[in-house]
Image 1 (tube, rainbow, N blue to C red):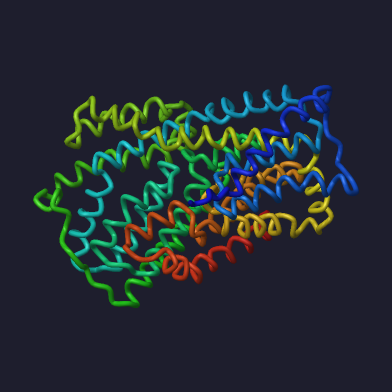
Image 2: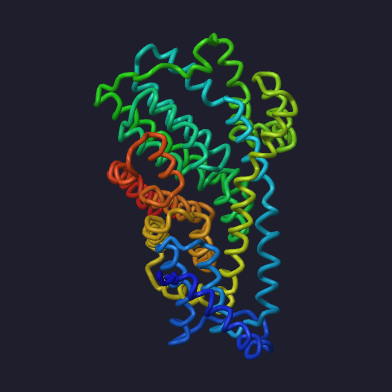
Length: 455
């Protein structure tokens, strides 16, 4: 007879249920107040739930389960009543789901994906460069950056682009590493990403302002990624492998360019739209306008019918909506921990460091946490950024910290983008991590220097 093995998370949930009744009795009369900076042993005690959450994330426990454990501990430590906890829960979820522009941008970008806009672009470029593989490698990285920036989803972009890159070039380590770098900086500073939404929500900085502040740095890292891919393909004297996708092989260049138009328009609207609006003094490129026009272009320029174009946009919202919902739940537990004064305690320690290195230290912390817990970049930001808020970081400093977490995640075995690259290039994820080590490490070093200079 086999004995059933109980897993650690199951024991935690059992303990949670047993604790709820006495917790309600002892904490029912707790009063919400502005938490002063805790000191002494109590300060250390308030940090314990954060440590427990990180440990559970490192052990690959689901982020909501990890957050629940930390939230229950915070309720006990801080005397938070069930009523207060319930209010945090009810406030956090709609707060995350109210980040509408990233949801819209992500949905319409996924519609462009499904209609074949990115595949047609790759096919067109492959024909145009006439055997110059290094230019194709550079374009793959540029396309990965653009697709991720538009959709806010690095893993979703890599799932589409990596198999196409592998079919054309094989598994070139520098190309894979470059795709990782541009994915990290793009989804952490994208106007369509969950991560930018979290930065905005926690810092109070509008998404548009945050994105504008980080745009030049994002572009700089994208150029770095393109250079790495170009150099790697050229140094290895790579050759094209395989044939064009059967779906596009019979198309003329004119037909392929026509299919690429929706992607070009969406990218231009997202990146250049705010600048054009400012130049003309009128909000012409709004989410409503470019969403409807992009869907219309998908209908006119691809094989999708109008109904299919609209359905693909709605279906494209599923990814970000489900993650916003889960992060909203997780954030509720983080807010409970914040109510105990944990972040005030941590920031009081960080604040004692020389002001010149506070931002680089925060960036380094984000990198170190992102490596083992990289599947949950959004949830990591909810742990790291409240400290930055209490220290009064600038929008640029927030961006550096977010980029640090993103780059750290590109050395994580559990990151979605890493998994997509492993699958798409048909190599073990350990090989992806090893190949990324040198180049992602270089990007991390540059980021630390930038945070020291501009932070």
